[in-house]
Amino acid sequence: FHTSSAKVSFVITASQIGYVLGLLFLLPLGDLVKRKRLIISGIFTGSAALALISVARNLAFFEIMSLFIGLSSVVAQIVVPLAADLSVPHKAGKTVGTVMSGLLLGILLARTFSGIIADALGMPAVFLIASAIMAIMGLTLVKMLPDVEAKHPDDNIRSILSSTVGIFLQYRTLQIRAIYGMLSFAGFTILWTSISFYLAGPQYHYTPRTIGFFGLFGVAGALAARLTGIAADKGKAKLTTGLGGFLMVIGFVGIYLYGPNLLLLATGIVVLDAAFQTVSITNQSIIYKVDPTARSRINSSYMSVYFVGGGIGSAITGYAWQQGGWAATSVLGAASGGLIIMIWLVDRVSMRPIPQPNK
Image 1 (cartoon, one colour):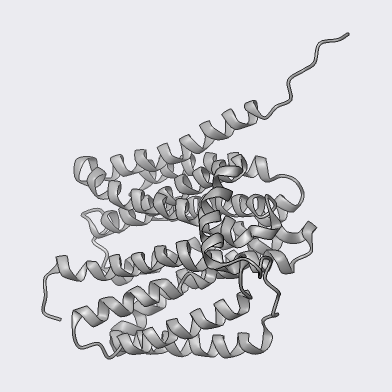
Image 2 (cartoon, one colour):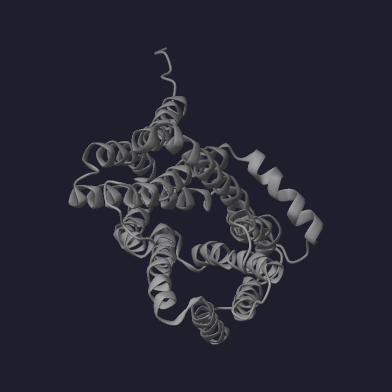
């Protein structure tokens, strides 16, 4: 578009704004209207926006379509609580883990293959192929997705949206889990922002396309998501929270110490992605049990706080890299895991029953 990098960077901001708007105003509606309607509408909106962005001729139109793409992306977060509702209660964790595994794999594969397609066919082809995939998925779900009744069909939009904050303030478990999620996603963005700087730097001199392939190491996170869901169903959710925080600390310390060794660096990335998903799936397995009739609003409040963590992580990573490079960002990431461990330990102690004196 022959414009400055500062103006182009707003494309990412526009998609993030769209996603936040979706979390705040669309996701809670899953408790008011049939979620199949929301999901199908969101998928076809995303498909149309992707098709239109492929023929964009000016930056303003490109940014507007980016906002709609971000807005429609919240469909994934509508699907997760629906999956929990469709599952039998004692397998809800496994179900959520399976859905999140698919979501994570989609993100990783999209990042890798979009670069390959862009190099071969150009960026418009990336958007057109994505649009076609979305349309096919939408048509498939029209036929296959169960049309589950809404939990609160007699409420109105205003009461549903206003009650989202109230639900968050009402449940301590939801608040604690949102903090865990915020710290975990902060660690995630710290890793993937700093790893791009590191791999492009003097240690490796990798191209953006090569760096994109490192996302495939995150496939381990998809496996961890499913295993964590199974563990949550077996009553091990509290233990997996501490495990996730511990793995974050170990992973960030490891990639700092052994970053120059490509094999060990890749191992560290695998450990960290597994850690992030362990914390995330544990959180979602627990929060959906808080109030099964308000799962969409619960997910809205949780994901809003979660997304804040990602924004904070991205913002402070750039500054930390300028100040101290790989060492500073690794310390920052390890600190996010350390905070999870600290809160987890305090929470376990505070929730422990107080022994009663013998009479």
